[in-house]
Length: 180
Image (cartoon, rainbow, N blue to C red; front, side, top):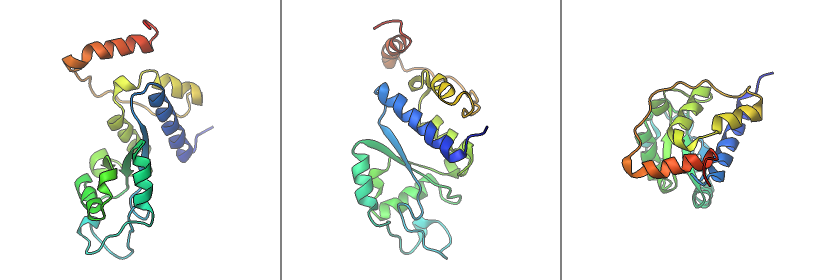
């Protein structure tokens, strides 16, 4: 039995959100598409949106982002292939929505496009440090009987800054039940 990609991503983000909230590590994360979700994607205009003569936001985009960004981190995840994250941010600045967005994900900074699973995996790798995902693999495997977990590739360990080391060790000991 396979898991439908959209159900897989919804489950994945629900587990991430619940795990991070439970550990008080990060706020909820919302990913929005760009064209015709937050900004109008005018048919027939080619090139990068930041270079268009006229750009506009979708009705109620600002009100929605303003409310959500008070309690959550908001990112844009788009399948735009020509634009860089900087280009996307320029377009958002032109309509005044950039102040609500923490970051932009596209082919240029993930190496993949939607709906490839690797696109979402790259976002997860960027947003969630390994130290904040203790037990995450166990939780998702047990919640899905092991069927909806992607293949991870180890890249490298990063040195923990000295000023964070003691707090990190204390947090890990607590999470693993070694102290309370």
